[in-house]
Length: 103
Image 1 (cartoon, rainbow, N blue to C red):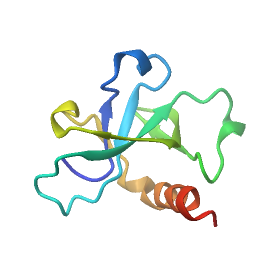
Image 2 (image 1 turned 45 degrees about the vertical axis):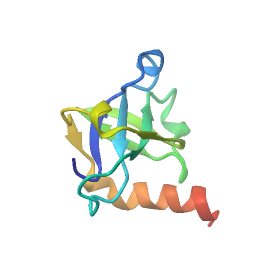
Image 3 (image 1 turned 30 degrees about the vertical axis):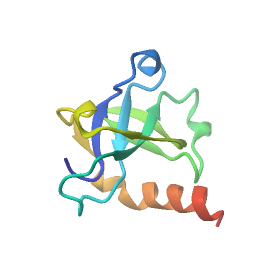
């Protein structure tokens, strides 16, 4: 399990609007009891993208990082990463920083 790995949404009721989650927790913990992840949603328009909710690409599809939809999952709920968003690390950290610090 690596930071910025993308997984299928583990919650059935959210899968149609938020098909993926991206792990944002640092991977320095070798056996975490919980994993922090942010939901990825289908954008309505490209104008939906902001500093707080940047666009990222998963499997050739634009997805909106819904930063305030951060959640904690048990490690077993996130299986088989589908992609890794390390290339978008700066945008993800900027969004998290903006959400937590407001600047």
